[in-house]
Length: 389
Image 1 (spheres, rainbow, N blue to C red):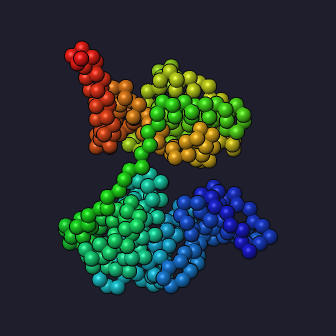
Image 2: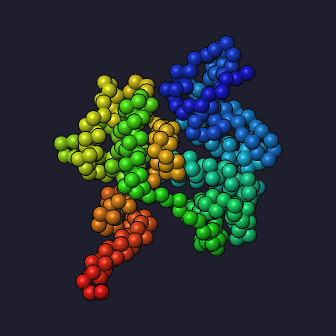
Image 3: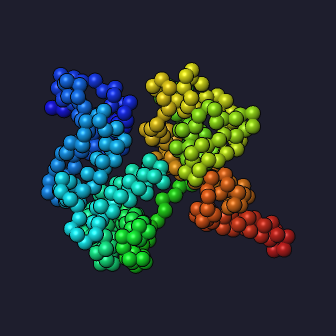
């Protein structure tokens, strides 16, 4: 029986896999269903395994050494799309009426998403396409996709409105790209006729008292040895800078300039940017232990590695603080909320958070209105003491 393990398969990782007494399969962490089989004689072959309307299929892609890992992954992702769509991967796709939605999805991921987007975004697109778009529309010629198909797909996902809207959004971008490639008539995208479901943003803003509870919980867990110092520093930096989780976890020491009270983010969601450090944030960074040979500020357990998963530590902290409903990303929202309460305008908050578009920051406009109302109430109360009996 093959032993199942999940890791990100690169040439270096596959080179390092050792043969055992039996065949072993190592599954890729990023493309579900893509893996490499290691034989007792040391040979290694890439494969995919997926389930479609015709049942489960396992297909060999090629031998390691003949084909590099990234190319095998690309081919594997394309094969999985076709399996999910119910096609026979060994047969010529399509039916003479132009490319199918499955073929468009394969090209869209390969030539557009993987080239222009970050890995997490690529993963999100692939999940939506495989889970929702291909089962419903994969076999259809792209030119045959009409309003009724999109409306039915959207309605089928009505119990999960966010997923429904995201699915139609992804399909719409695919069809716009098909338009740009000349695969469909110009302006024929049927997704534009679908009205998105109303959704409610799940935003949580911490009060001063709740920030205090989190601070005490961090101190207690770190002092008691239940929270690694680097994980505690990461959470404190998220609270003090408003940065995204990935921006803190991928911070390198060479990008920290304590003498200028700033850090340089090489690859944030909106591109490179400089984040100013408050004295409190600078103090946290100055206290983070630097490990020899490790370039990462938030170091992991393995030598030279960084901490990649912080969720379990965060759950531990919020449970100790009695704030089980607070998500890690809510620390970023709360940073913006506190800035508004202190009188900063939306333009400045956008700069602090690294927003590229003012529309992104506008989501906090309701907080600005609340701050204005509170200020008006304070002013009116002061005047009221003078003019009212």
